[in-house]
Length: 143
Image (tube, rainbow, N blue to C red):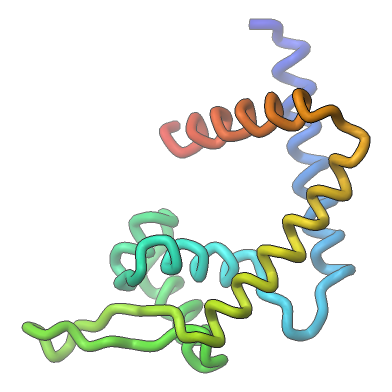
């Protein structure tokens, strides 16, 4: 493995993350979802429901962190608690209609922005980047 290439990737990732956070902060409207809310809602939308415990495991975060984040989403009307039949204390979280609409709106805005950034790329470059970025993400998840 070429150490210079690895160093370049590391530095580009650091700059990319900084720029994306800065752009998100700069462009964010008052009702836009932050990154944590977006990822939580997307995960719950994909699975249909989730518990705080499963979300904490998925995102590798403490349950108290997930509880605070989901409570804020519940307060905004994006999530609803559903009691578990056999355990009165337990509940699962589901998207509300408002949560689904907000997630779709944010996903569309984010996808359009990424599309704008890729306008000068060929279809082959976009496909290759998509594949490699997904592979890199899997390595991060496993590592």
